[in-house]
Image 1 (cartoon, rainbow, N blue to C red):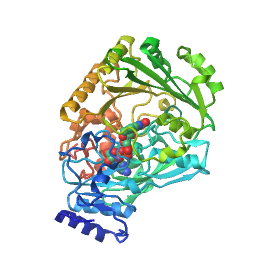
Image 2: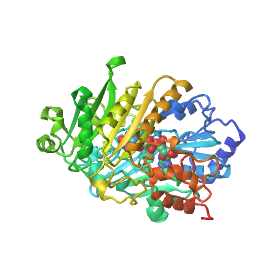
Image 3: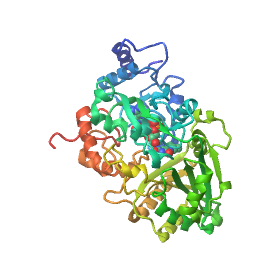
Image 4: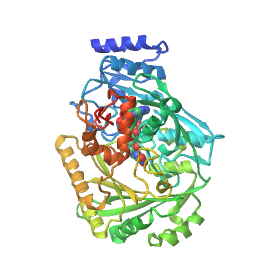
Length: 510
Ligand code: FDA
């Protein structure tokens, strides 16, 4: 790689002397002079909203093949007082894996994506740079009766997803991705590689939902595979308000978290049509861990209002269901799960809530009125209950468990670049969020860290106190925030691994 400034030269010199295993046979360090620098910088950015002329760029991007290169990068970044941004899949909603206001480097784990499946022991090791799609594909190549409970979008990176919790269609049966992690390798602030035993139970607890970026660089994860039937069923039934969508959504709130845990029915709400013809549409999108002949009687018993018919349903393998939920056309080859092009890349802003009491009809109607104000606004309602009710709030840092009926994600997308357009859409979603306050969890109002939202509060550029950070920390982690800060104090007291919403150490004075 070409070098363009003394600090970059010093850094590379440091890298090559740090560890003997550091190899120069592959190009792994890219400076702004490198022809590939911009391409790599932008390659996995999911929300291009943050890519503009004023975005501060990394001094270097490192794309390690070997863990020793990451160890070297940590030691050298500390030596030259550079911040590190770690990127796995690049899906962070606020760009925290590649943006920083002070001089920084990116460690992009794009080349660290191996996955080893051990069907006999029902476990797998997956490197952080692999995607969920690659994981689902690798499992399916080895077994038709195993799956993994993680998110719906195949290009999401394992590193960010597991370290923030991670949920998808198997949530009601098996909980979060983080609930199934049994070991991990991490590079700590001193450049040491630690497994579960070496890092200790506190740190191992913290990286399973507390956001990995605060504690080190997680190299790989050992996960338990979960059992799924050979045949599962998917269905999507869509209704407009004219066809009773409001009443169905209202009714769904009472039953979705109480259903048999084999049944997951989420709702996607958006509007169809334009101008005066805009109509709200609710799509009931479901995975059932069984066949149609078991599903239909179950639905007739508990949710007859939806009127589900056998012809609305498709039987498929579990891995085919991951393709179905990702929105690929029916009959797509399994290899679409390996496609690295991001499916839903767009400018967006999102927010999240947890709901503990059904929202009344009049309030749902108020939401619909707001959704039609935007061109592309989506509300996703993911049911909880089942296994989520059985796991304690403090088992891992993700605290939104028993009593949560469902999670809401609000998202607004747009295509016009520019501050004015951005401000308009962001203002819209903030106003919807304000409107929702009386109907969602309170004291604190919960939020999901993987749907990162910097509106909840951010750290200062330098050190932020535990109490300042609590404004957003308690909302993501509730009572677990304190323990996360205590772990942070022990493993990274100097707050080297930090970003706008990293866990701060607890002040020594208490
Ligand atoms: P990215 O690489 O941007 O990292 C996110 C954060 O984790 C950053 O702070 C980063 O520094 C840190 N990090 C990444 N790798 C690390 C490592 N190895 N060690 C330490 N820190 C690391 N969620 C969900 O639960 N269910 C779902 O179905 C979906 N679906 C979905 C669809 C789409 C289109 C998007 C954009 C996002 C989702 N998500 C989701 C949210 C997703 O889980 C969340 O954005 C993850 O953090 C993304 O992980 P990446 O590795 O891709 O992000």
